[in-house]
Image (cartoon, rainbow, N blue to C red):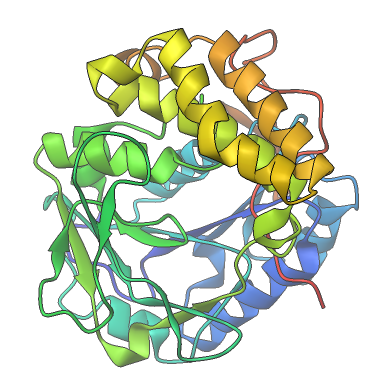
Length: 343
């Protein structure tokens, strides 16, 4: 592992793909224009049905393609990719969504004054909506405790740069930060894995830092593949993961099953019923049923569990799912492992 801070030529970048190879390839091309080493781009494909792994291997011949036989979820896929980044000796790994856009100076700006590998730090740029451009979407947040959603969002441009929570939309991690906090909790199939990790990392002494350089700014399409903010698939996974998060981090009075159901069904279900959104309401109720009925192990139990071995076939790796039969995974819907923009 390098002893020097990450640079565009040494950082590893991880992209998780699910049926969206065109978008993933577009982000990879932007990385190459920003000076990224093509052999340090890592793509984890979560059993896409559109031939993504083969397409990406063709378009990105120098990249590492990890092709999972099953959709293991976003958190577990990230753990696979991060583990491979450390095997490459990367001084830092950048988690990046496949529905983002940035300029050619992105990497150089994000990595300016980058922490050394032995410094326990996670950093993120300020993230803006892709449409309309220039409007802030997320720039870090502080955790107030209590229930999910109780975040004080940092306004873009705020001089306070140390926060409690960063999104995995664009998240730079050092090896020391990953060692202290452990991997993502694979029980979060989609959503809340980053908030959970940040809270664990913060308790372990990891610095959460917003890097406000204007050239490091990225633009995010936000949930287009899951149907936007009203998408039933997004609603299901958001509700399910919110309940898991609540059991791990919520106050004691919110951890009982009866309280979870009452809080979850409360305003959201009534609002969906009252606004004539039957698909969204059904997804919300299914998410509640799955979330209430599954086990949430303490973070200390789940943190080391998600990294899988990969088997090389030229530059395409096949990951075998070792979570088959877990009661905290959903295997019913056509999961979207991270939203990508529609054309």
